[in-house]
Length: 413
Image 1 (cartoon, helix red, strand yellow):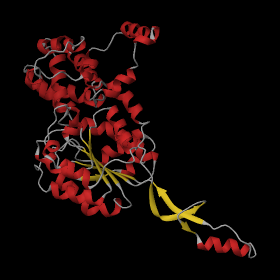
Image 2: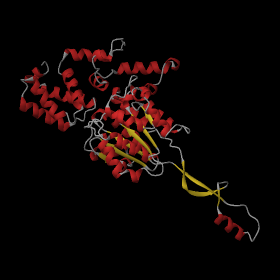
Image 3: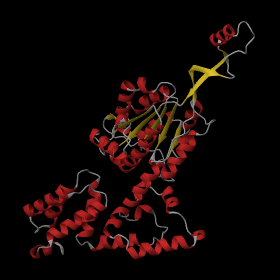
Image 4: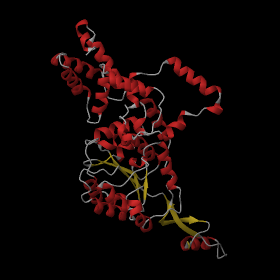
């Protein structure tokens, strides 16, 4: 290793410090304490063997399983792997799309890693800003690009900007009539008590009748969000969206599930989003782990459905449908959940693929019981979700669920 050979000249600690800065810029939680621990680990194992050196740094800098891929790519790039360095340079250049099958192409490096290793130069940023402001007719807003950009491919700066945009989103839930009535000018029922009281005070004179109408109120919203390893990036971004709608209106309940079910509603009610996310992270112990969708839905149906799914509640189920239990008992729990709520909407990030097919057993077990099946992978998909709530005459219930049972819709989106 070229960089490791500098240990004799006193440059190893400096290189490890710079490597930690690269990891932090790429999104890994790396602080000063980890840098000190990494120096101690390297001092313990030595620098004679490259694999021992990599393992020592990985043991310090990696906290979660999903961070391993990003760490491996950053390690190979930073500690002089010519092939991956060439791939990273190709990622920074304008892309030329070929007609080769996607399966044969190598997986691209994360954009946030490329940004951390080679940040744009100041003069390039100024040139781009001048080009944007000179002729507005031939330019476009960066916000428009972020509308359709997948959360998985965003850089750290883009993710930060999208979080601000997500915080302004709202779900316009339609108001539904409830059993209680309120006084009204023109209603469907006569308010006999108010009418008699008005006649008594009028001294026998004829007075107009008082009317009452049914009160209208927004239904409860229950969100069941998957936080397994395959949903990690999407669930972390959607957490900011859930915080926004929780603080926008009342009767919003959010539960996270992976291998177990966790109610985080009271944590999301904190006004400060950073405080809310920190409390959620401390409360959830199975983040980015496995997925037991059937068991978690069964626990929700037993413990929470009677408390949360009253008065025509709407349920948002956010999951990719990839179940570790291979759909065991999932159809039964989905049927019970669908019968307990007014509307069941499934948000699946896998729908971002044009040729999506419902082949996994978990997806096949869940599809017949949902009212709507929508994508959730970028900002535009969240806006489509808001638009779906504004449709007053949307199909629901048995007619829509029967449509999902047809072979054409069950095996291909």
